[in-house]
Image 1 (spheres, helix red, strand yellow):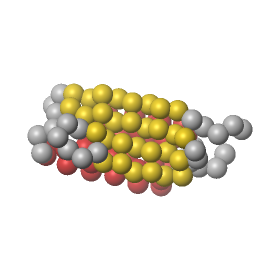
Image 2 (cartoon, rainbow, N blue to C red; image 1 turned 180 degrees about the vertical axis):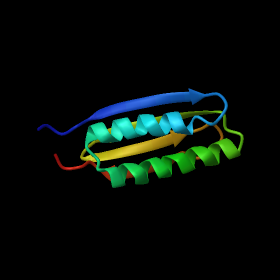
Image 3 (cartoon, one colour; image 1 turned 90 degrees about the vertical axis):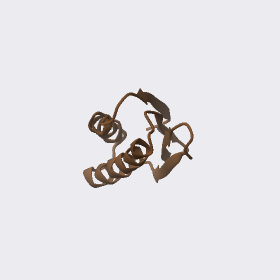
Length: 94
């Protein structure tokens, strides 16, 4: 199977809580890539914490990116006036 490469980005705006919708979306993307439930739980937990931190500081708009390339998945949360939050995990073996 060829190596997976993709970019999935979501521009979110509005009042929190949008964490539940994003957690569901992240679970779908991560499951499609092939992560096991424990990794999906860990990644969505980290993503939720990053979003909660931005909402607590008044952030109402952010971009969430899932980028798979070179055997890794990078997840980035970017919000105006805040440093980007990011995590990188190896892509699961097929």
